[in-house]
Picture (tube, helix red, strand yellow):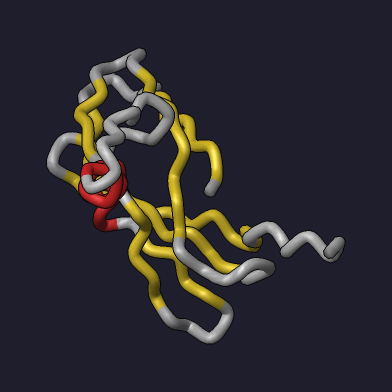
Length: 110
């Protein structure tokens, strides 16, 4: 889980969809992120609906708008990965990579 903040500093609307983002492990395997929609479906069975802390699954941000929340990837503790993400601006798809992210290691204490 990691904190994500998105700010639209462009002159036109920007759209993103977390379901299209991927964590790419060092072995090259691509992993879906767990979206807010996924979490709400999982929590429904427990009667939970608290979703305010999770990054919205998709949004259109107007110039100057921003969004933030936690983003989740289901990888083992200590796994290193690159986060491939994308957004659309004026019907043009853009891609970028956050390199060298790492899942927190397991606590070594018993």
